[in-house]
Image (tube, rainbow, N blue to C red; front, side, top):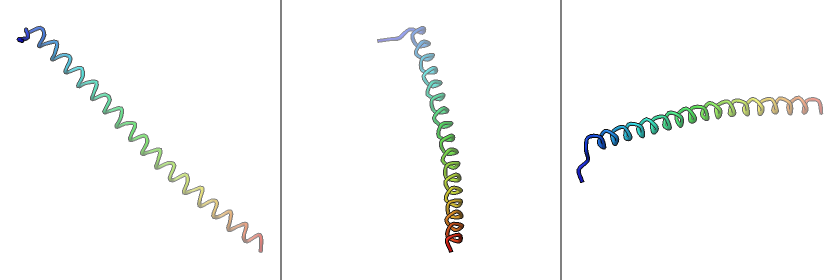
Length: 66
């Protein structure tokens, strides 16, 4: 089956559009991954601070108990 020039151009446009859609999906996924990485860093820092504060509170309570 031979394709005429118009059909080839339509296929070319369709292929280009699908590549653009794929690119946008990849960029969105990459930005989501970066956001998740930043949120994980913030959570780790926040939890570390909570643990430190709790340890300080326990230390103070032990001193009061004496």
